[in-house]
Image (cartoon, rainbow, N blue to C red; front, side):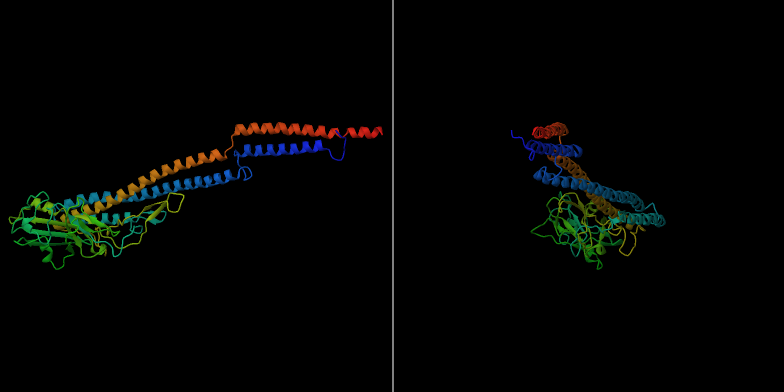
Length: 442
């Protein structure tokens, strides 16, 4: 080997190797310090890109889970207020049943009326419940109600198929199974209903050609109209808030009555028929069957879609929607639009108010069921999000997390090589000093 002093290639090569070992050891230290085997794009460009997307996904899912939990808290707040309304309605029904009993005087009913007024005020307060400043049960968060709104619609599916409100004689009315209702000429048919919180009543004496509609025909101020059966679709009842057709449950026909006015202004919150025989006794069979007119479509004013959206996904359209139906006293038929409360000052009014409270209670229970269903769904959604976040994080860990044992082994190796390179660099530098001895001899 030639003895040179200008270019010590052995030292140069050793220095390069030492530099590589230093860089390798530094990279090992960085992995050990961070716990990640990918700390920059230079470590693994594609792996960094994939893991970063997974990191965003994990953080988004964690926020989705928080959103779902916040949504559940909001729904529980609404459900608590609604449960209070249900409790009040149950109590009010007891009071109204008591008021309908003739052992009470009108003075007693006036006392019960005071309690009913206060309870209705509380129902109004319950509808104003808020969460983070948002009201939920006052109709402001209602889902779509198409213009012009919906009509209160009642249907009776317990009468014989083919029964017509305008053509079938009262004396010919039969149950679904064909048994006669036993209405006779000379009996009295009384209709009592509550419109917009106010009670009205009318009676007719049954004649040979009297029909159900006769009680309306002799009553010029009637607020209810019969719906003519559709021969092409006998199960037709009406139209709901979304414009969808509502049908009978069994697909058969029904006797249908609808409010003449649309929305809350024309709301019929309770409707009761009673048949009294000529001797003054009540025909319980006929009264019970005619009293089975159930509210199928509730009155609602037109409304845009103000449903609440709970963001529970990592994409913009992954939401759970919840529209709260109006639970104010007016919407439940317990108060007029101008503030008058349901009147139970007479026995007849109290008797009709029983059906009003039944309808109001059904509305509240339907809303409670809807809230419970969404709450349950958010619970399942939260569980799914947590599992998805866990699986995504596990996948990201495989790509990005450092194997500390392997990295420590690599660091130990690179550290030993670094020390060896330093020692050999010293030896390479020492080899050039032999040239000085040769120069001294000259």
